[in-house]
Length: 115
Image (cartoon, rainbow, N blue to C red; front, side):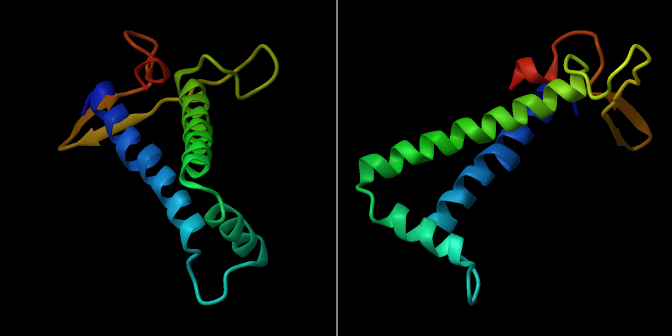
């Protein structure tokens, strides 16, 4: 797996699934007795017209994408996770069949740029 493949997987399995999951939960809260907040949010969302529901979905998308982008910035090392001059380095390694690929190295494209 290379960086581009990893980002494609993140896009599909993290971003898209999270967006659709949040929207599904707004439309029809899961569980036998959802939390009061969840029911209130669902009632509010379901009372919106389709244009406003789509507007909320766009806000959900931007929020999810921003969260993933920030997380990838942390993995890429372009956003500090520690204070002070002596900082560690994060490395995301994909390993398969004894082969290791560093996905969050400082060479080539950064993960946050590919998303």
